[in-house]
Length: 315
Image (cartoon, rainbow, N blue to C red; front, top):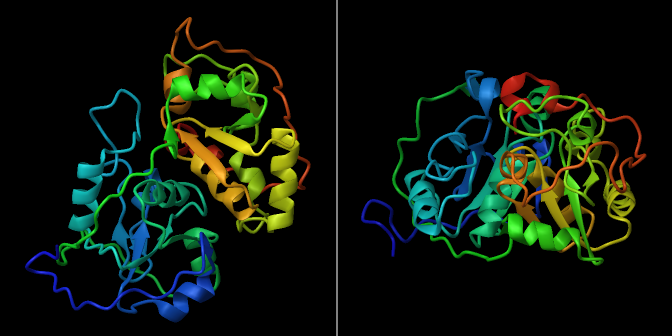
């Protein structure tokens, strides 16, 4: 039911061409009725002080994570997600474009969360804010908060898009499934310390490393679908059932985005990721060194956003 301050006659948003849109697509439609633009930046990028005109804050460090959960950035429940999206003025008929200030880093997390709650009219801005500004497109000062009317968004959960440690453990022993880790190779192999204290170094036995930055070209845009497919086929050993992990469930969603663009459909993100699995526990084994399928050979990757300070390394 529409809220009293948000009339039912509001026009639906523009048709959304899929999970990824370019700066030119968004620039041609910016300000159109029913188009919501979200800034899902985290850390220092969230405090940069400028945004795409009219963008609203998708706060992964605030209302759009479940702070009662033990792991950071845990997906909120349906009621909490509904309330958060309504408070940001989102209607079920809107189209949504999400970006972040690092490029394609935390924006994919927001896109995957929307999908998990049954909303398919969402896309990630290819290259994020850096691609937008490189194209000479305008920015404005960041407003403190969204102050418009509430929306009518309703969560319609899709079980299985976010999974737990038990499901991931089963996938590790499933010959039809692959568990892919989006962290840097050094963290995956256990040669670099984890940025969160108390976590073991290394990776899950049987997992493969696929750093999320390797899915992007040197210009920060997502690689073409054919290159993405080759990267996933190498890392996953030809398996089609893909499960993704990272530091806290954020950059794992970049792998989910890349896999979607590459034509994979049986996808899930481990919400607890290394923030849960890496804790000391005999129930969750850890190994070090190269894992199965490490090394995708798709050319030089851009500098990983995980190297952009501790606030990003942990995700």
